[in-house]
Image (cartoon, rainbow, N blue to C red):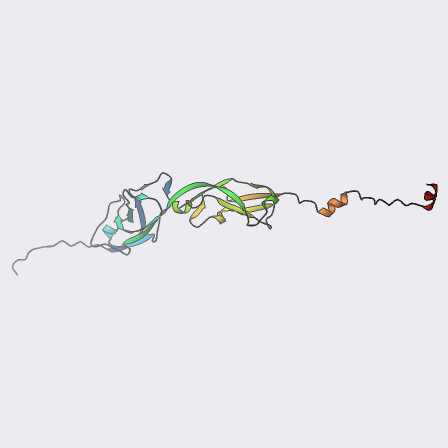
Length: 231
């Protein structure tokens, strides 16, 4: 062989490396009502394993999923399946045919929340005589609840006590236990005391009769023979 082309080649040698990087979520453009806000975003995986040449892998700091909803108006919580992009410390994508990753997508849960103040109420059981109750006082008049807008919209009040023949004069209630699924207390007191004042029982009929003076029977007038002779 007198000659060959090319006469030389460059060879790059590097160590194959595997690192674990966190999965992060980036929020881009979205639109929602002023009464709504985003809760804590969660993912079904927290990390991904990246394998490739050390000089490239060392630049990768995260696997990023980007939420882009554009002009779509968010009115309730969402779940999306998003592609993962390997990024460096500046947030720029790192692309190489020599790099592989064991997770290429992630499920992202995007909770939408709203807060509303609702009153605490009591009610009477069916058939209960409401005239037996003189007064009912609830220690806190209302609570602030939070949750998905659709779930919260169904809660206009919270019934903390149903008054029936077994109810006590003092009733301590955990308000959180009365909330539907998807709704929670925002802050403040979680328990309420409900004081029920019953009307005094009416006196029995025989007791009323016992307080009256006994009547004295009137004896009939008796006529004797002597009274007849004098007449």
